[in-house]
Length: 153
Image (cartoon, rainbow, N blue to C red; front, side, top):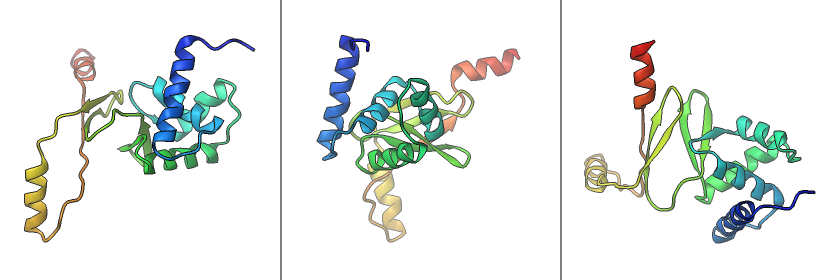
């Protein structure tokens, strides 16, 4: 068996801490899911994640991947994004309130940390008899690279 590198140990330690900080028991399967999500710069479907884990030799079932992703989403460790038709995508995001820009072509994700929507959300909610407790924004469009390839193609 290969000795893990310092980067692998650091990723594993960070993944374990993320699980503990949300009150979750650290299991091998949860660690594998969080570590694989940490390798993904954008987002990934449950099926894609399952295939990547299997390709790495991780013995995990698809149902376990779905259950783990649901639990991690519920606990706020990852975000579930709905920009794929009929299937959620998952992303390990930064902490704190944020929104997403998502490319509908290449699926590039940009996290937006600044949010000045509170007054707008609260105002519209109040006009309709609601009290806003939270909000999330997913802006879907084309990134500069994908727009450029359309004009040259």
